[in-house]
Length: 276
Length: 296
Figure 1 (cartoon, rainbow over the protein chains, first blue to last red):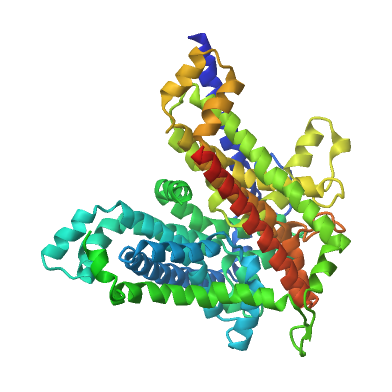
Figure 2 (figure 1 turned 180 degrees about the horizontal axis):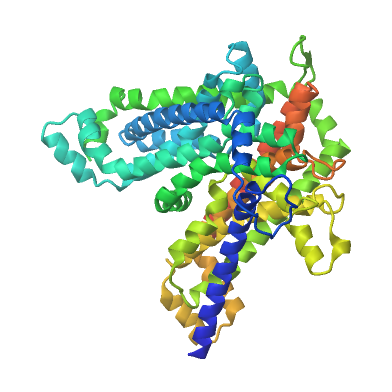
C-alpha cells in the first residue's frame, strides 16, 4: 500500500513538474509584458503593477489590427474551401474502386509528409509570374493545397466508420447520392468536420515560412506571426516588455480558442495522428 | 456488393466530379511546385536573367560544401533534442503513470499540450527572453550564487545550439507524453499485472509491455518529431538566424538565404530537394519498420 501511495505521488510529481515547465515560458512572457519601462527586469520578480501601456505601444506601433485582419481572411478562406473540397473528395473516394482509392491516397500521402521547404522556391516563382506575389491569394491557394491531404484522410477515415446500411437505406428511400451526403452524412459527420475545421484553422493561423516568402512587401497581406517576427526583430534589445506584450496579443486569440475548445483540439490531434 | 461489378463498365461520373477539384488544386500547388523544385535544382539561376544548365552539378557542390556539412550536423544535434530526449521523457513518465493511474489527467493534458497550439514566433519571443542576459535563467543562477555561469545563452558559441535544442524539447515533450499515455491506457491492464506478477522490474515492464503496446504511437511521434527537428526553420530564424557565427545554421535556413537573399536559386532548390529526400526517406523507413514489426 505504501508502495502504491509513493508511486501515486511520483506520478503526480511528474505531471505537475511537466505542466509547470510547459507553462513557465508563457507566464514568464505575460509577467514581462506588464512591467513598467523603468522597472529593473529579472526573471522571477512580479511586476509592480499592471502596466497596460506596453500593450498600447505594441498595438499601435506593430500594426496588429491589419495583421489580424489578414490572418482571419486567410484562415477563413483556407478552412472553408479545404473543408468543402475534402468532404466532397472523401465522399467521392468512398464510391470508387479500391485500387483507384489507394492510388489517390498514395499521391496525397506525399503532401502529408512533405515540408513546405520542398515547394516554397517554386511557389515564389509561380506567384511572381502570375502577378500574385504579396497578395492574400498567394497565401490562400498553397495552404488549401497543403491542407487537402490531411482533410481528405480525415474525412475518409470518418466515412469508413459509417455503416453501409445507412446509405443503402437512404438510397432505397429514393435519395440521390448527393442528397444522402447533404442530409444524412454531413449532419452525422458534423463533429468530425468541426474538429477538422479547428485544426486547419490552427495550422493556417500559425504558418510562418509561407508569408515570410510570399508576401514580403505588402503590409496588408502579412499575417500575425510574420508581423510579430518583424516587430520583435526590430526592437530585439530595446524594449523587451513591449515585445512581450506583442507576443501576448498574438497568442491571445488562439489561447482563448484553446480554452473553449481544448478537449476537441487535443482529441482531434491525438486521434488524427494515430488514425493515419 | 453487386454494384461494383455494374460500375466497372462505366466510370462513376459523380464520384470523379467530387474527387477531381481537390486533386486539381493539389496538383497545381503541391505536385507541380514539387517537381519544379527538382527541375530548378538542375540550373544555375539568379531568378532574373536567363538560367544556365547545370545538370547535376549543384549536387556535388552542395554535398561537399563544409557549411552544409555543419548545417546537417546541427540538424543531427536537433534530432537528439527533438526526438531522443522527449521520447525518453514521455516513455518514463508514462511508465510511472501506468503504475498508478492518477486522476485529473484532462487538466494536465490541456497544459502539456499548450506548446502545440502556440505560434513558433511567440515561442521564439518567449525563449529569447528566458535566455536573455537579464532573463530568468541568469537571474536564477545569480540568485543561487553561480554568477560566473551567467551569459547570453543564444549569443554564446558554446551554448547557442543546445539552448535552441532545449526549445525543441519543450515544444514536443508534452505531445509525446499525451500520445503515449493515451496509447498506454489502451493496453490491457492484465499485461501490466502479469508482468508485475512475473517479477518484472520497471525497465522490463517498459521493454516487454509498454514499448510493444505503443508501436503505433511511437511511429507517429517519430515521424512528427523527426520532421520538425530536421526542418526547424521558424525557431532558428526567429532567435539566432544561424548565429553566432554559423553555430546554429540548419539546411532550411540555407534554402531561404541562398534563394531569397543571395539569389542562388539552383543551390537553394538543390538543398530543398536533399532535405525533402531525407525527410521522406526517414518517414518511409519509420513506417516500413513499423509495418514489418507489426507483421511478425
